[in-house]
Image (cartoon, rainbow, N blue to C red; front, side, top):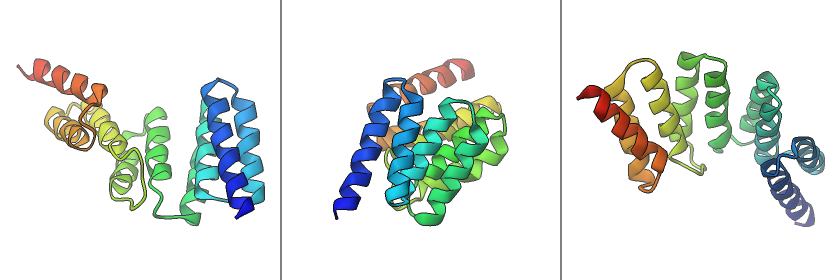
Length: 158
């Protein structure tokens, strides 16, 4: 119990440091948490942090480690999709987002829909994109990025 709380605290502190722009400190905190107990969260968040340094391949590998620990945790699936998008590999990203949509344990659940919508916009598939953005809004009605994307698609179609 004590170790689990320490692992959670290190991950939370790592996220705070990352949001402050202190990437190296965040990575160190995530590594400390993984050293105490390897968790899907620890690996996913370390991957997120190293992605800030542009090391997308390491970020993907960390997410794959997270999936091996907890295949029900949706965040690493979505994150791999994002890293593949950043590499311009849109078609490779799609199955990762589809898997994230169906993950048993995932927050924020609307992210893979938003990301798929962005892919379909980039591929010129406005109606598929619109469908994804609408689904994102059904899950998270106040998401401004989904609302903006829908407006842009409607203006481009009209």
